[in-house]
Image 1 (cartoon, rainbow, N blue to C red):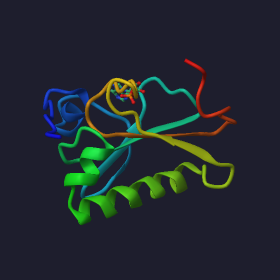
Image 2 (cartoon, rainbow, N blue to C red; image 1 turned 45 degrees about the horizontal axis):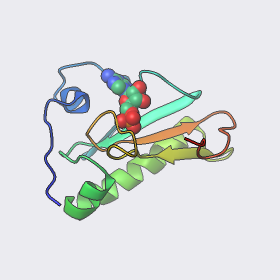
Image 3 (cartoon, rainbow, N blue to C red; image 1 turned 180 degrees about the vertical axis):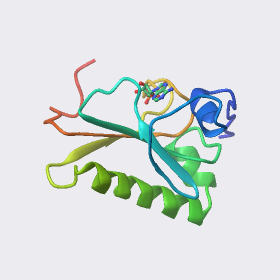
Image 4 (cartoon, protein in one colour; image 1 turned 45 degrees about the vertical axis):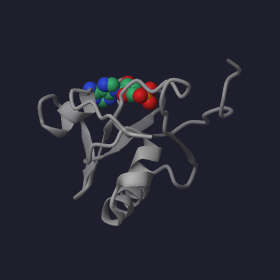
Length: 122
Ligand code: AMP
């Protein structure tokens, strides 16, 4: 499948510095910032700096350096936010069925309270 990245999405604008963000961590290839509508005491989004729409796009086209940096950045955010002990949830929504709002790959890291079961019945 061909991936058609929309460079006007809100996270692309954050990466270009056109709109502000509450940065938690910046690495060579990744940026982590607080979700503007937090759903738990810890709610951080981790994005690659590259133009990737979704996890499957990233997995297919990102370089090994980008992939390693992204995975390590997610782990580092968990450590910095203090959620490794009590636990956390990672979510990456993709496409229509995943109800992805912003078409730039992001992993939500949620924690700081019990999060309930993984999915509600639709
Ligand atoms: P998703 O449904 O996985 O695409 O979620 C997109 C997330 O981005 C939502 O949780 C929004 O609250 C969050 N979001 C949207 N705009 C911003 C922004 N400017 N800064 C931080 N988070 C944002």
